[in-house]
Amino acid sequence: MNMDDFYTLEDRGILYVSGSDAKDFLQNVITNNIDKINDKSSIFSSLLTPQGKYLFDFIIIKHKNGFFLDCEKNQISDLFQKLSLYKLRSKVEILNLSNEFVVASINKEKFLTFENAENKEGYTIKFREDPLFLDPRNSQLGARLIINLEKLYLSIKKLNLKPSKSNKYYELSHRLGIPQVECSIMQNKIFGIECNFEELNGIDFKKGCYVGQENTARIKLKNKLSKRLLPFKVIEGKIEINDDIYLKDEKLGKILIGNIYPFGLIKFKNNDFDFSLNYKCKEAIIKFYKPDWLVN
Image 1 (tube, helix red, strand yellow):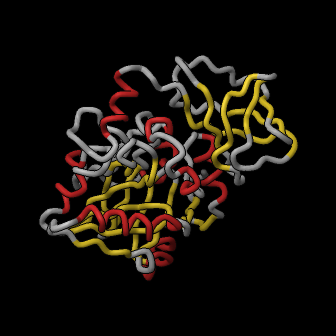
Image 2 (cartoon, helix red, strand yellow):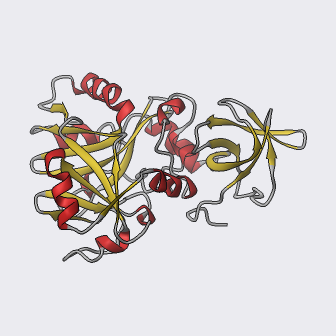
Image 3 (spheres, helix red, strand yellow):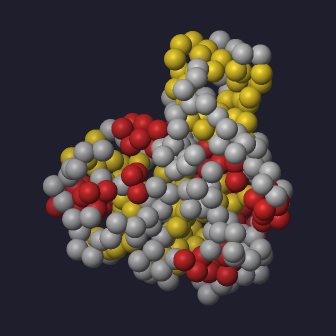
């Protein structure tokens, strides 16, 4: 990402959760701690099944008297429905503002030129009235701006930024081991903790109960995390979703996301995985990237 690049992330959607019970309502269902959110701090979180399997992931940002949820747009309607089911009699209003607001990304170094900006994941400031924050998953992804669509291009001009194709942003996200495209494919197929949400600052093991907490805590406390979602590149051939992944004759996992930013769920115990090797699928040879958050 160049200093003056500006990426409009058109495949992101926005929900707005407000009301007197909004904070407690979110705290009871999400994997992270809502108390971490304030005018200077945003968080990454997720919503799991009662068994701890992945359903949705999103970034939560305080805005006025409520919270923005920045989620993949093709999941936004399902997330709206799921949250509405959990709402019951809570004094909460949930709005889909995806047609009014847009998510954009700028370079980290550009963000740090703003007054009061700090080099801290999730650190949040205001650009005029709109939240601008370092990505809470990994600051190398830069900063995100949630802004009314009508103000977007005027803001680009004021900041002297250059609109760039979003594929550069998603290539970086892929190399960092952060899936953001077609994540709905993973629903009910993978535990949230296997998505590396702990390493991406998306799970708080000290907070109280939430949906899927029991299995998530059990995997963590009993050191039963034996698989991880990891990015890879195709060396040759063609891949398909659910293709098995092998090292010689040993089956190690399968492909879960098979688009141009592919991910596989791989056996991974105690960091005992060789990233220098090539691995085989049905009709392809692949090589895994090692994200920088993965410490030996």
